[in-house]
Each structure stands twice: as C-alpha cells, then as structure tokens.
Amino acid sequence: MSNLHLEDWAASAATARQRLADDLHRPHYHVTAPSGWLNDPNGLIYWQGQYHLFYQHNPHKAAWGPPHWGHIVSDNLVTWQDCPVALTPDMMPSEAGGCWSGCMVDDNGTPTIVYTGVADHSQGEQQTCLAFGSNDLVSWHKHPQNPVVKRPDGLSITQNAYRDPFVWREGDIWYQVIGTSIAERGQALLYSSPDLVSWTHLNLLVPEDIRDTWQDEGHTWECPNFFALGNKHVLIVSLSGVCLQYPVAFVGEYRDQQFYPETMQRLDWGYHCFYAPLTMKDGNRQDDYGRRLMWGWLQEQRSEAKQLVAGWSGVMSLPRVLTLENNKLISQPADELKALRGEHYCYENIELTDGLRDLELTGSALELHLTLRFGKAKEVGLVLALDANHHDGLYLIYNREQAKLRLETSNAQQEKGMWSAPYECPLELDDTLELHVFLDGSTVEVFAYGHSLTSRVYPDSGSQGVALYADGEAYLERLEAWSLKDIWVA
Ligand code: FRU
Image (tube, rainbow, N blue to C red):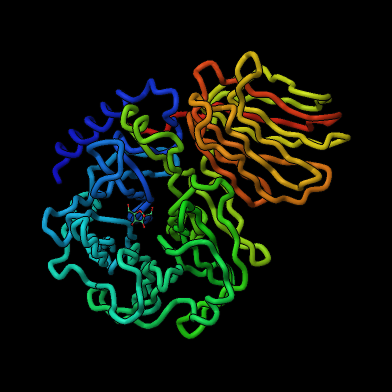
C-alpha cells in the first residue's frame, strides 16, 4: 500500500476518533476502534521493532457483524497508531460469516495470519484459514488453498464450535490448538504441520480422562492460548456457557503432545467483562525479551441500543505481563505504562475514621497506587467516580472477615438498575491492603496481589471525585495518583 494511501487512512481514523472525543465514557489510554465495534484481540506480534495488535472489528456500526481484522501498531506498547483494516470477509459463501479470531506467526520472514474463516450464517462452518502479509503488515492476501483445516468427523464436536487457532513452532514443526466443544464440554484439539498448509490432527490437547477431573462451567473453550512459562505450561481458555463468559488458566505439564493440568484459576474476577484474552511472547530484545504479554476484550455492560447510539463499542485491556509463582498465574500491568503518567498527586499518613474521606483529586483518566492499613476497621477501600453529594460512586472495598475484595458498580451507573452485580475476588490479607487501579472513562482495571478485577462503569459527568473509605479507624500509609495521557499518535 502506498504511503499516501496510508496517510489518508490515518487521517480518516483520526477524524473518526475526534468525532467521538467528547463522549465521557470513551477511554483515553485504552485501545478502542476508531469507531464501530471491537471484540477479541487477534494476531499479536512484535515485528521489526514494533508491536502489532489486531482485533475483531465491525467498521460499519457499533454492533457485532461479520468480523474484519482492525489493526494498530506501537513502538513502545503504550502509544498507538491506527492502520488500515487488515482482513475483510470475502463475500463468497465460504467466508461470508467473517474473519473470526486467530493469531499471527513469522514463517521464515513472511508474516502469516492464521484465522477462523466462517461460512455463511446459517451453516456457520468454522475453519482455519491463512493470510500472508506485506513486510509492513499493511497489505494482506488470503491463501488460495483456504481453508487449510476443517472440523474433523467422528469426534462429536458441537456444530459451530471449532475456532480460534493458536499456533507456535517447535523446531521445524508447527503446532496449532483449536478451541472446541465435545459432547457439550470445552476442549482443545492439537494439530501439527510442516508448512502451515497441510495439518495433521494429533489428539485432544487434554486427555479425556484428565479432562474429566476438571470441572469448569464452559460448554465451549474459545480462544485457547498454549505456551511454556517457567518450567510449566499454561493453557488459557475463554469459557463460553449458558449466560456466562470468562477466561480461566490451567497450569501443568506438557508431555508427549498432551497437556496435564495441575491447577485451574480464574484469570480476572470481573465476570462478563474481561474476555477472549490473547497472549504473545515479547520479541523486543531491548526490553524484557521473552516475557508473556496479554490483552483481553473489555465488553460493554450497557444496552445494544446505547452502544449503537454511542457509535463505538468495546475496549482492549491494558497490556498485562504474566508470570508464574507456585503454579499460580500472576498478572500485572506492563511497566511501560508509566510513560503515560502526567500530573502527580501524593497523600501520606492520613488517619481515617468512619465513612468517606474526600481527596482533592478528581478525574476520569487516572492511575492510583495506594497502601491502606486496617487498624480497627472491618472494611477499607477506595471510591472513584464519586459525585459531590456522595450519592454515586464506584466502591472498591476489602472486607476482612469475608477475605474478599469487591467492586461495586451499581451506584456508578447513569442507567440505574442495569446489570451490575458486585464483583468479588477472594484474597487473604493481614494488616495492609495494597491496590493498583486504572480508571479510564467507562473502564476500571484493578490489580492486587497478582489478581485482576476488571469492569465497565458509566458514571454521570459530575461524578469524578476520589475518596478513601473505612468503616472504623484505619490508616492511609500512602496514595500516589497520576492523570494519564492519551495514547493515540496521529
Ligand atoms: C470470542 C469469540 C471467538 C470468535 C470471535 C468472533 O469472543 O466468540 O470465539 O472467533 O469472538 O468475533
């Protein structure tokens, strides 16, 4: 694609963003689509000195539709630039349902997208397809032999549950796991290939008898990720079930091309919000080479009608770094995000008594880092998006007896009564609570002791206050906060 065309494209994306800039609920430092719909992260890769993130996208309206692949690029993991849409569904029956989720690999210098091509809606056949990119990852051509993998016969695979290829290489051999549902239960299928084009089905990734010992609520495993971390292997899957959607991670051993989980954990405690995460190995040698990065889709929690009126839908989480401690997957915001810090606020050594203690700090694009000591209080916490009368607010509270950190969003919503059960994360603590919180328009991400709790909230324009909360005598050791800058490079 010529430079001129690229510039035109960047200018039109910037105009689209500008048009939505006054929307109070539009994040400033989280990735969104220029306009229209965004869901899963796709095709993550560090390519020739830059991070590329693709995403499920409907450029035509703020509703899911036959997915395209949107595309953004970054030099530093923090500021991003819009690139032209990478994949568009071909209007032939084999792919009219769209280019669903997948990944990207470097095939000896050729950037190659491995995605799910979906046939027309009625049959919805899902199959693995390939697309090759130009060196700048801007122009893409679909492989003439698509689809390269089809749903196998004879495995009782549920119709329309065969998608989201995740591919890696060991020596000369490519491997692929595909998310599926067998007899109404989530599974992943393992394949191998010498060339990315001809694939052999090896086996179920998790042996059937071992799978029996793990009870999860999903009837389908969507968006599998499978990778080595430390001396273990990790399988992340997004559970899709009746009225539920959330991702879990299994940690265990990989032997003889089968995976034996030893632990299972939730990946985020914000039910129905953080979904379809995709990870990549960081290829940036000047940085933490080899670390595992993850992004997830932060789903809207407001009505479809409101999303259509807003003209945009869907947010990408902040980049998170995954590490392993005692078979537990720890997720933390990437350090690079510190580059976004603007105005700085600091509070120290404040005695708290019953109720709220306002801070002279307001905003809707904030990072906060705080340490509270419980003293005699049973509950302590932080309140964001607070209005002047203390009617509305987003409460992040730790309850000592219950040993739970909970996020209450119901009083921080323009539309009262919308679905907003409290989110709770079990957490055993002694005398102190340390929280790392990111608030951005309608997005809140909380990190505590390796756990994350993510939600969407839609406060009123007057609700931008910050306060501390205790239900007895407690103590703030230190709170640092920063207003964070915008991430879009024109
Ligand atoms: C997960 C998912 C994937 C699928 C994509 C379609 O959110 O359902 O399984 O490929 O979204 O947009």
